[in-house]
Length: 456
Image 1: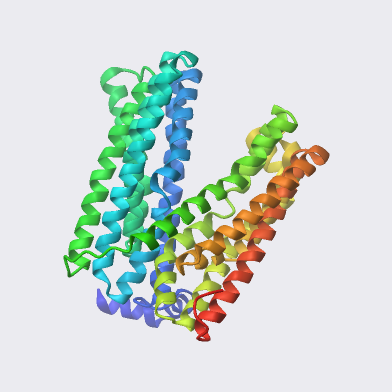
Image 2 (image 1 turned 60 degrees about the horizontal axis):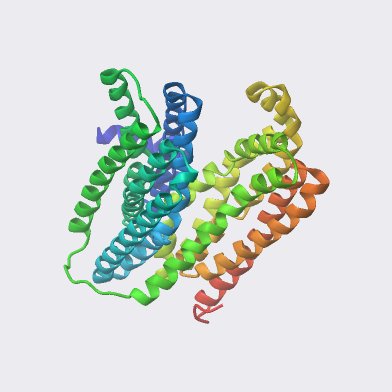
């Protein structure tokens, strides 16, 4: 087998591949391999999510499926305060501590993150159940049961996300993405199929949520097993050190940053519903969701390179860090540009073909939103550079200013231009946010590598 491999690598195709992604064993090759793997896993996750929605919509009916969707939306929102920003912190700090050999801090951080997140998720769950009990007369009995089960599921989701991101910090990129994005929905789909075969049908949303809790628990056990084995293999010492003040401050900033990131995703839809009509909300939602595929490559690249960014910054390897940022930006642009061109030129045809003739009216909004997504891709992993270098306060400041611009411009532009105004506000927001990220990242790298310290 070895002579065949050597023959391929020495041939023109092997040499061309090596120039593009690096030789096997090199940093560039490993990152390209991780990025491709993450793209496959994320695509598989999207497919699983679509399959789950189709199956449950058919099995549950409109009302019960609506209750199930409500519970999942509540979970998706509450996962941010339940994890308190620790997912990103684990990726950054574990990668940096590994390259410095600070094994005791890795154990301390993992223990602190796990205990704090478990306490936060249980507190939120208990508070939510108490609120449901106090105001139970305002909800139907089925809605109370479904939301109660959503609160029960919260600790499982929180710990599962922590373990997946911790694996990323150990550069187990594929394993971390697998347990976080695939294991839970795959187990859930299998359980739904088994229940349908054995029982004949899924009766209500509460049954579906119970199956979801079992699936999350199964995925959590598997993630815990992977992380424990990784710790035993990678960390030579059993000593534990704490740096709780720094960790707490950083995690809260990262949690606030995550919450701010939700504003450009949801505020436009909410404000259209408030200021305009439900019809325009539907048109904008289709345009926004269609354009959401554009940063798919950017997100996959960021997932793969996050630990490496933290390590290169910690070791002050300026040349490799600069090349990695440029390569990540180029990869994101290469993936985004075909979609940007297609949605700009043939957006109306695509919307008409996929969603129906009435939705072709959102073609202009789609073209405007794709412009904002292209800006996001061109600026590369700048926000991630700030986060992985410990300057999440700057990333929070930029998205905070961008969110303020977004809300103000939405109020003005939606009343004048409707869905096109919301799309313009979205694009303006990304331009402002990423220009600030560019400025902060430039200042950070200049000060760090010219010996001026880490303060901006």
